[in-house]
Image (cartoon, rainbow, N blue to C red; front, side, top):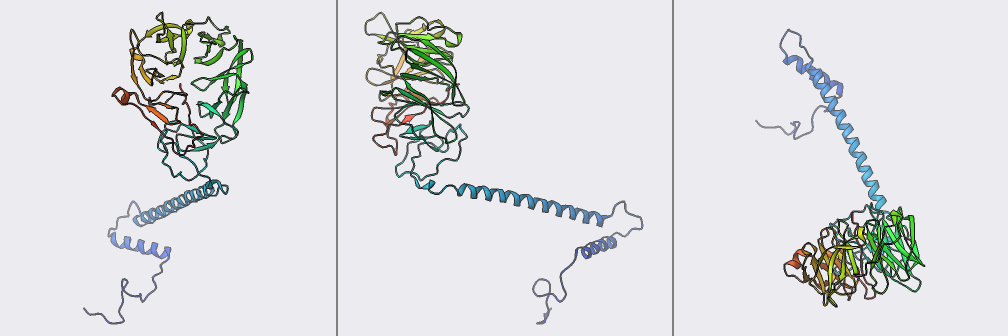
Length: 421
């Protein structure tokens, strides 16, 4: 069938009649169609045309509401993105060092960090927070400026996303303890001029030496509360906690004592054969270095703080350094401690008549921190970061130090201790 030049249809040409149809006309046409197709004199129980029309109207209303909801969500997203991109001018111009793993553990819901370019050097992936100079780099890749904080020796996370406690090195004016709020506010000085400062591994207690007394307090909302004090021998300093009891080191390697402060007691008897303490296991026992009757030989022991550090188990074998540097893993199984020539990894589960210890890389020169995954981190004498993985050390691997990217030679990184329950 041939087509004439002027012929057209609904697919290829312009129609000869208007195609605009009103809703009323469409409804009438639909009803007429259903009426012609229903060839029965018996009245229907339902009106099929009316049902189709009502169904179409409901569908239209649902689509309209869905469109409005999507439009509202899009408006919120665009507004939020604009607010985030429209921050203070100049914040993105300062270079930074990303020391954390953006995909690693980050327990704190932190505020909007300073967004800065990645340095040209490749950073070391650090499982815990790290302080470099006057900057705190979280394990989640965020950066915090520590205004007014300097000469840092150690740092501890505060539980319940409560910020950080930062301790200075000893200076002629004493030591300083800062609390870093979790909202990018300026650090606050909690203690100044203290002779010594000790922070509990759970981040909830602080002990310090002030003049003739040793004091201890809880930490709540960045404030020291419920302070207690006791007179102490000259030169005696707090070094840690066993639950709520304060561990006190006597001067001139004169041993250790326990101050059960919440019981209202005075410090207990001095245990003179305890030379150093390294930490506390989950069962409450203290891991320490003790002297024996053999000259110049020391052993490791589990000490009971409820009985003035009486030993419950002792193991001898490896030659230990006298500097007292070391740390116990969160599960209480491992001790990283300095030996005669290098760091040693000790399996505390073997503590008995002997003890199993293996060489574990460069000597510890500062604080040992353990991750929740059971990896020990410390900084060696050259300012490099050392990771000690017990499973690899047990397999014969000797840990090596790695440089921290972006760290200036005059800055020594400080690894922040995680919270222990």
